[in-house]
Length: 190
Length: 75
Image (tube, rainbow over all chains, first blue to last red):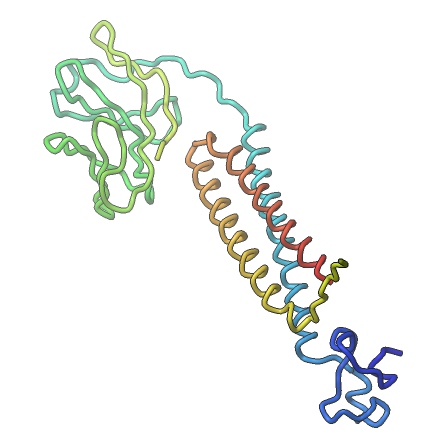
């Protein structure tokens, strides 16, 4: 029997049971109060403490998620190094000209742009927003995605305006003996 | 001189529970943002932030556990 049910009242009673508002002993209280002699304040105290415990469990779940990403990252298969492939001849494109190609074979379309006498840049042609094809605007020094008016810097591939948040993946190039070779692909950076 | 430890009743401890709950919720929101940002960076090919973000999230869990420990220690 809890102290308040014996009619003993004091500070401890507030933690262990209800203190009837009319001050009469518990035996004279209605049945519903005798069946569940817990005050609202105590009920709220315990339920909020349990809620806090549940949220801390959520916090643990989020840590598990973080380490799952670490595990995925550590176990990710490293792609085999790419070999250089000729993708165009220097004379094939005038300054400001562009052509699409695939590298390596079977990849998504890439875009090669000639920006100077011996200067070329190449990027993935798919916009990093919603994969629309980007088109070069060489006179502005930019690449344009017409779907949602996204703009990328032609020299770096970084997003300048519009919805895209990530840079276009860049294809590494090497010009030799009148030909342009693709030698690798850099991952998209923010 | 003897020092007597004052024991608060639950109704008096309620503001402490509410404050702890608010701190824990804030930290969990921070962790949720951290997970979202890390996933976004990882899927974008940036793996440099993966380990520091996981450690930061672990520190947040440590803080939350400490606050919960304190809360249960009140009883």
